[in-house]
Image (tube, rainbow, N blue to C red; front, top):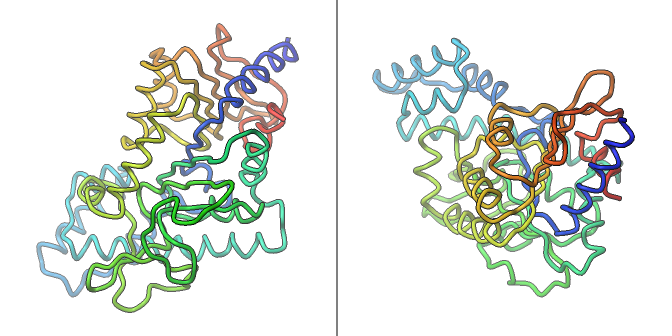
Length: 339
């Protein structure tokens, strides 16, 4: 029975995959490489954001914010409930960068002697065996793992800026290239900064925040909705919306359906336009399960980890979830279904 189910979902995965899906990378895709998630970030912020020199009302806000985190309220909800001043928000951004940038660089260094570290790179290379000239990745992640995955396979990538040690904002066709991966980073990137004059630049792999520069990463909470109306996020989100609107298939890797910028488009494309979706992750979130349970799409395949090196399959072709042998919830394992 398990083999019969595996054959059925393998064919389903191949049918969706042949439509050149837009790839959506969530935090789970980065967690697989040891990048900190929201819980670790919350602990880091509480331990490292210094507020002793701030006004009393700002110190009170920070205290209230930390109390919520200590009460096991998630970081995004806490930042929604306790609005922070621009100065405090800036310190949160800086400490977020200071936590994630070294982790990102550690992954990069590890990839230099491991030329198969990124399954995503292998997937992209395989996708380019078709007639596709352009592939699209949409992600709320700040890290540059998608860029590293492209470079592992010598694939040209574009993320809103020109290439070089100091990049500038550029259109995706600013270079002529036979094949290209567009990486739409809707919440910013560890390599994006603005200077004191508001000029936006891209810097490759700096080890600390340069003097008088501000990292361009959007923190969770209410600030996310304020910042994304500004550049470079406004243009990036507009471009990613166009990509989502044209797609007929999506491949979600470690994405928990908790980001409204991406989720709303995805759900509506599946519900109203018959788009198909593949979801692979270590553990499906409640939001993902709700998406499936509400019959928002009749073309879905979702896979999560189960005990004893098994995978739990949720499929529009199955009457109920089923477990099969193998770690098909991971990207490398999933690729065995489609290649």
